[in-house]
Length: 230
Figure 1 (cartoon, rainbow, N blue to C red):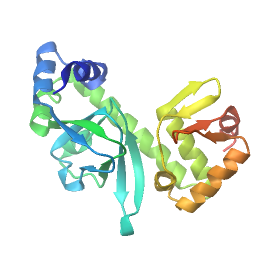
Figure 2: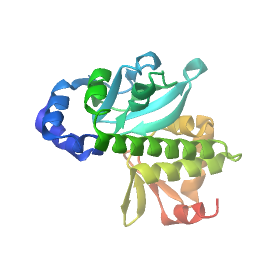
Figure 3: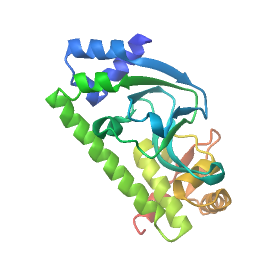
């Protein structure tokens, strides 16, 4: 494993920072690192009971795959995020596929390592419960957003949700630090790509947001103000 930078990153993640020095070194030694190109499948449904994953670089999306290659995005994980722990706990397959959004480096932690070093540590278990609670809250927010009857409300709600998870504030407003295509936003909001394109154009014209050159989205204060009334 590449190691000094990855070791520093692991130590900032609560699930790892509460391991003893000896256990941390042993877990780090057992991590298998893999590189994935953009749009490569990281994890299929049938693989979910075997590993937990750490994102060392890049970003991945968790999706339900539908007919004709359609995707409904459930979550996005970035550098420093951990995922796959739920299936290791109950040995059941999660109904989702994970796909890299850009070139990514992912660390794989086997169920054997997970059981030996994480489940046997009471302090780490508290952090694990916190992660599961966060997953539940995020799932509830996405579910609430995609069940809104109006397409514009759905898009606004999802953009606000992404800004809370991935937003970087500056003098202009909040930049969503993700490069999302219109197709990916459509997968998040459960509306057509054409509808997303039309709505984004309208929101730009109304001064609620700005599409930046690197495909990130700037949510202006006007956008946040309107969210108070949704």
